[in-house]
Image (tube, rainbow, N blue to C red; front, side, top):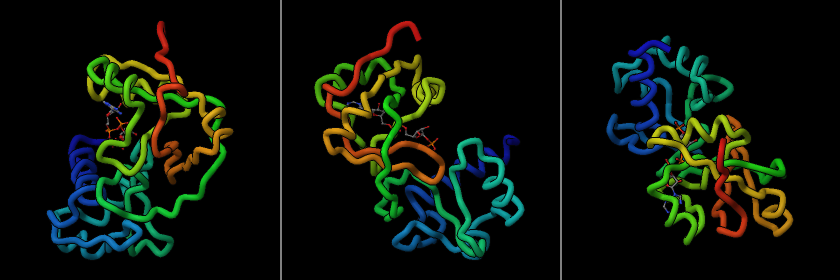
Length: 178
Ligand code: HQG
């Protein structure tokens, strides 16, 4: 993705996940914004939107079937209903974080902070990328199978991120040498 497109994608993330009002947009209850409004209210073109949806490496944004609306697949801090259905997770999931949060995470468990859910990854590589956003990554291995057995619900976003409400300390450990 070009530098310009990547900057536009970050702005789109701000509008569709956190602050639609910055461009005078309103999202419906399910997080959809009107594509026409988005184009009218910003300098983003339809061609750019189409390129971002098609090429974003994490599939962060999706068009409605008729392409009149667009939303973020996950990662919101504002309340939206994504209508995700609970799904059985893989036996093991991973979470990438950094050393400065570790003590607190080990005491309190993984919390969703500003987002709707705790975000978990199916692979160590993805968790490493997520953690690397903040510094040297630390990978937690999560016993998703046990959590599911204990009745804790998991969801998968449209772009395949695993989501859950909270992960108690008994369900994870820090992976070393990864
Ligand atoms: C940490 C990006 C202290 C947690 C990524 C994380 C992901 C705690 C940070 C998606 C804690 C929250 C989500 C506790 C959790 N004490 N720190 N009890 N519990 N934390 O950004 O998982 O590019 O909200 O470890 O790729 O980093 O936006 O979550 O470091 O998929 O599409 O608090 O965001 O995707 O940070 O990232 P975040 P995250 P996008």
